[in-house]
Image 1 (cartoon, rainbow, N blue to C red):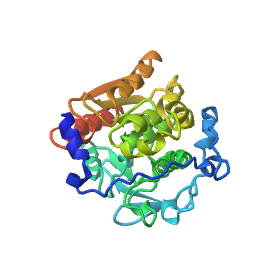
Image 2 (cartoon, rainbow, N blue to C red):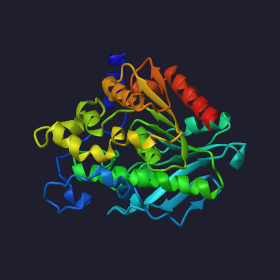
Image 3 (cartoon, helix red, strand yellow):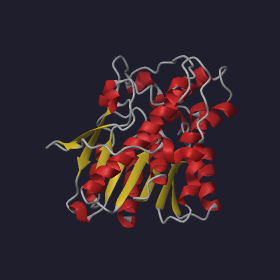
Length: 328
């Protein structure tokens, strides 16, 4: 299974654009500091402000199901400041549940479309959001979503703040369509964003965290998918310091926000995952168990990349769709 994972990761075989090892940068200007200085550490206790926003007022739905609106968190890249989401309404309409779907890092525009249709088959409407710096939101000159996760410490924080805020704005749109049974589903990087959004938005009643990890820094430092990013980080910052800087975008930081809330949670992880090491997923599960929160665990008999191939993609997709349909 590990050999299969590494083969799928090999860009020369998968045909995806080459990974670029970009230089380390503090990116202090992205988190309230000055360019060229060491980035300040954002205080996660102020997360209500960090992930707070002014609700967008320019939602526009095209006849083909393409939703657009302006991101509430501005960036210097005009392409990235427009949010794109694809709407997949179920036959149940607003009487049924609706879920915001967040794909994995470097997903193209077609990613998770099949999953949205599978959710429809279970009576769940789906709104699939393109993440910051992905597909139509990718700045000129890039071939991968390098600015979403990179060796630029501050920009990575800002990108994931934007992703959380954009996700909550998608919930605003669903609410404006009179949906009340709202859930969220995220995969890999998307699971991190989905979880933090749900932790800060009480309108979310159920969530499926597909490939989840406790800490953002540890995944980047140790994971197969981010080897090229870790190569630029090592020698410039320690793992301990990176954990401090990226604590604000780490799921485990916000687990206690679900205490006292009745949010159904499905935690999915893969036994042979080289990108999200299983011990980090198990640490996340343990944090849920320790607080006595309601959750269900689904362990896949594969790895990260192999989740996208049969039969594992069906085990994963049907399991999540069934869970969300039942809980919502």
